[in-house]
Length: 229
Image (cartoon, rainbow, N blue to C red; front, side):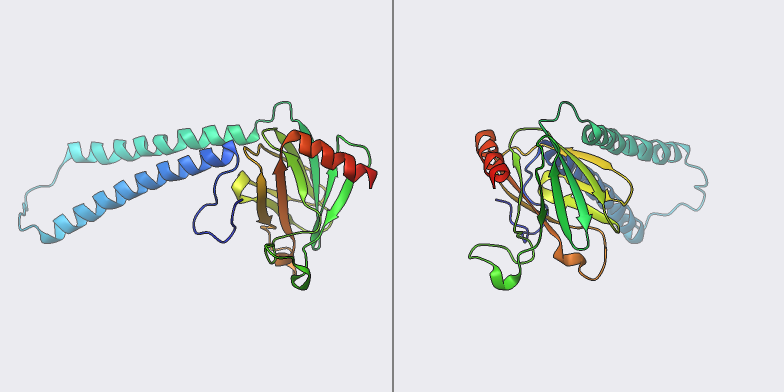
């Protein structure tokens, strides 16, 4: 299970999030190398006693400090564009779920099943059971099968919201009158928490998201029980 209170990134639970974490490490290493080089040059300039008042031209240095930043930008841009295309690519989804943002709760519609929809409210603090997370657990979790591509259709009924699950690498705006699309694939079973990431009103911090990933046979059993109830 991913713990929302841990420092840094949450453990990746989808291939897209793994790619995002790798890109973060790649870009951060480049930034560290640039910062170290600039710090070294500044310190060398401040501490050296070597001067040359007649040095008015250094064509090779100008070529280097023009070409090198361009190469660095390419090294950052290429993997970034690759991840952007991967995030937009949706092929043969196993399941389509529509998430609607309200003030201040979420509702979910499973488009592949007839009349399967429910609202997801935050569990009040006084009703929390042992082991539940305050301000994060909900009464009705969004259940999905693991290792299966899930397509999310996200919109809003009133104001701007944002459906975000950090561990799954998903963050999509919910805009009234517009249907945005996203996708994810949970690589292992567990509970993954998120919150509305748009300032949508006074109770903005009280509309959490809980996604439960489980094996396909358990998911089908849950669907059967939900439709029967």
